[in-house]
Every structure is written in C-alpha cells, then in structure tokens.
Image (tube, rainbow, N blue to C red; front, side):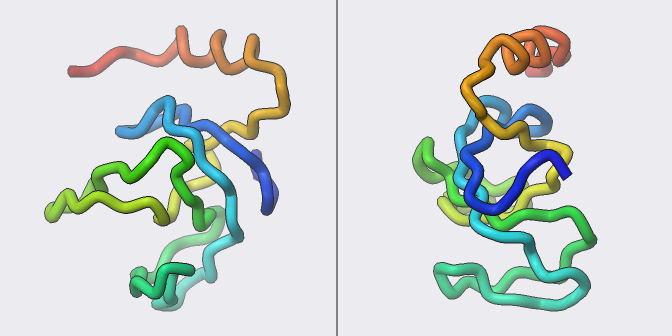
Length: 99
C-alpha cells in the first residue's frame, strides 16, 4: 500500500490527476457500506481507500457525473505527499496526456 490512514495524498493516475485528498480509512472489502457522509457505496476489492477531496468537489466517473467530496479510490492511484514534490513531478511528467 502506498498510503496510510491520515495521509494527505495526490491523485497520480486516472481522471482526477492532481487532486489533493485526505486518506480517511481503508474501505471495507466485499460489502456495501456507508461513506462518512451517509452515502451508500457498492462493494470494493482490497486496496481501496475512502478519501476526501481537499480540492473541492469533483465529478464522479460513473454515468451520473455528480460532484462529490468523499469517495473511494484505489491505492495505486494515490501518492502520499511527504514533502518530496520532486518525486511527484517526475512521475507526473511520465504520465501520457489524454484529452
């Protein structure tokens, strides 16, 4: 796992690259559960965190595209921010730009 509970992290893969999040807790594996804001979330696999956007609400990637501040994200899409921004900048440069 890249992150641990309580980390501040940046999204480094997927649709929300650059969004800063707070890593709240590990999501329960294989069961429907409630997010901290009371919204039901479908079952997830191992290695998924419950996160809160520190960059304001972002559009979900499912079909309804509603804006949320609390969601779930795979650990491999997150990089904890520990003050070493050079590592992040190098990784970001390696990401292909898609439009």
